[in-house]
Length: 488
Image (tube, rainbow, N blue to C red):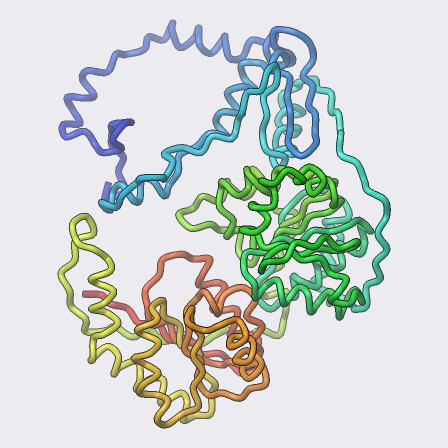
């Protein structure tokens, strides 16, 4: 497997068989006659259009309901292949020796309720395309309903590269819009809301994003903050025109008795940074709403461990994608890779990563290398952002740098009021170096004046990297990015 080859694995333990040849010898061969019978069964024209009883009826509401009697053998196979799939996170944990407790081996998104098969709403386009391509007759019953019109006025002008996303949303009721950091996806989302003229729910996963949306709504839709609904931070208030909800708080609200009114209160839903939402949250929160329109915004359609299908199954396919090159003004970063001398024996199956992490963040020689590079860039007049994933590392680096430079630190130890005050200083440019974690420098960190980024702690998710680089491409100067590679 290390050379890119395949092997036979035990489906129960997900580990390779010790003797591959013995396993292969014990497999019962399938004759060509048996294969022909299977082929004829799957391609039988009597089963391609309808199932055992009646036409295929597709009912679209907050989910998709399909009459089981109309599902042919071929369609059933298609649905199982597309909606039941392996959880990559499970096998990664299993192979690295980590506990898999609470981690599902498979994702299964087909439910059988009485005479119906129920599947996620975002799968509607794939389902209908499959039916058309395979000459399957179907009847689409659209049970979605528009709510009474909500009046919006949009007080902004879109840039040329933002227009295709809005145009795509005018033609599609469900879908994902991909826009790189700094491309103004919040403004695009507000334009779509204004065009649809429906009561809107905006779902976010962090308070910082919720506050940013609130500021933009007031600026571009002219709605005072006191009229904007909020679900989260101890508040539950539904706005007449627009409501912002924290996904965690929304899940709790949906468990209450009055949830039935809540799920029918919005004609359009916008899910911001959708790649962060967990599979169970899709099922237990987003899929309960009876909105006519459902759009999602993200800087990257990737999910950690490549479970990207989770997004499209629930939220639809990508309907528009802005490229970084579309913005025109973004300068290509200068990337500097430093190989460190950190040398640690580490076995992923037997050693704890926390031990390796502690060694890494307290290694004096590694930290000296980082501090030399940071000091060099600060002395050229650049504003610097240092990203780690440990609070102890923030403190260690800050102890050195604050003696000579104006530093700001952001971590989970900061209160909400403290964070707001620090962000005001950062946006005003009252700093030389920001030391923080990806949690505080990812989505929603609307910082326009940083020119140099230091990635001083390892991570593997490509989506994070796209986010971080985008944050330093907003400056007029060519951004510089340092990456520290612990090759030993």
